[in-house]
Amino acid sequence: MPQRILMLLLGALVLITSGCGFHLRGTTNVPEELKTITLNSYDPYGPLTREIRNQLKLSDVKVVPATATNKKSLPELRIVNSTQGEATASIFQDGKTAEYQLAMTVQAQVMMPGKDIYPISVTVFRSFFDNPLAALAKDAEQEIIQKEMREQAAQQLIRKLLAVHASELTKKEQVTGTPEIISSGTAPAASLTDK
Image (cartoon, rainbow, N blue to C red; front, side, top):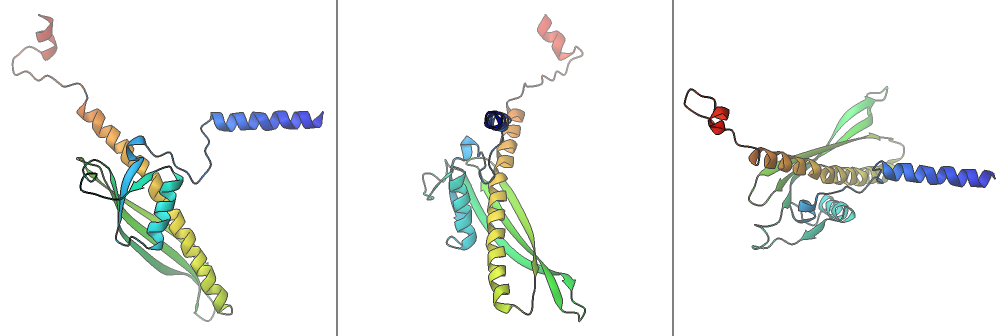
């Protein structure tokens, strides 16, 4: 009897979470117009570009090489720049740095064919404890943190593609809205159509 109740509750939980639009983290529902893109990067074989390609693949986006023919028909995600920095977050009693705040900023652009260029900027912050007694472990931990920061920046970049799509829809609505008739006579424009 308790197993039946547990299975019933588990089934209800699955139905509720799937019915409300819940999706597992890590995948973004990229709009159809951005399902096939070209990727251009300042560092095409670097770890950040590889991570962005991986996140695009996880989001079911097909990345195709840029050619003269598809440059005019496909959107382009252009990774412009990536910067990393660190600032002191806390210090030991002797004045040495105890903790750093690491920051990674990625600047990109989405170029819609025959339309606008949309700048995208993503910043990821992480804390790093600088233990002077464990120098080797410190370097390994910093590498892991930087890898996680690249992954988070790539995920945020893919999520910002939704903002590009929303902006495109807004512009489309503004262009296809009903035109306003402006008359220079004394009668209002609405009364001219009634005659």
